[in-house]
Image (cartoon, rainbow, N blue to C red):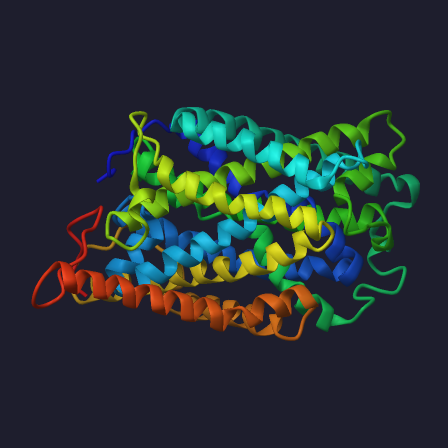
Length: 466
């Protein structure tokens, strides 16, 4: 069932991969610009997206307990919806991470510019790419260990901020307090429509929480480890995201934050503690490296799962002697180089454009997971399979509510800022490219096998009837 992978990830590493997925550059960098635009009411966007993220994770948990696989939602879409859905979902997930990698590399370049403003962004981005590529090509054990420490630094940074921020608010240090939530123009100084427009960037901030599902295929004892990792997401969302944004809005006026700097660096730089801002800046650099590292890891496995079915270039299915799918990793890294180029031509717009495009992939992945769980439940009710004991709460109603929320996020992109509108206008082009790609795959299969189209090869046989 592991498709040639080595089960080298233990409970300690999987738990931290789950945490690392729940804390990304969308919070560390993106929250600054969104606070500047929406004000303290941004916390409502984080809360709403957090509820959707929780149900997505519970849907994923049920699917993983039904059948752990490194193909994750691509295999689930193939099984519960159809081969075309697996193809479309896999490539949209790849689009997500291709764009996310660009955003992460841009974030790293932005952070380093705090210390070396004269250093061109593209040089920093290229150096960061070289580091994470080397890590991913070594072995999954090296990836898991590095990701453990990266995630640990993220958690320490957030916990430190929460403790310090709470102390500042409780003791009203430097004007910190709940009054900042309503002062300086009110709770929603720019109006609630702007808060709604921020949903796309907030959904991007939650991206990568589904990474734990991909790691399941290389996890020892996934049926014990995965439920713990999934259940822990809800309090991480409540504390790390909603709690952090709420404290950010109380510690400083929302007018103090800006898009070009991490809001956490902004806070610590104003504390007056020597080097506090620099230390936090170093930590958020590791957070961006962590996310870029995870992107190469996940897309390498997804592309290999698709290549085994003939739905991705054959080269992306190649596996090294160390059980590393280096073909898919190198394929994604080549696209990341495009992000380096983007930082050369439009360094200021690169982050917003990349996150908007990535959000389309996030929404597709989340929607697929929720819908696949709905189909799994329906198949169980028909007696075609046994549903796991670890289940999505409130199904099927929570499925439909989550899908409606995701549709709202996409529709709002059409009337938001220029970066989001650009991404929205790309939807027809992406749909056409995927449709043509699927048509080419089907044509190749018909040529390979005379008569009816051959059933595609799967990495995880034994799928239930639909």
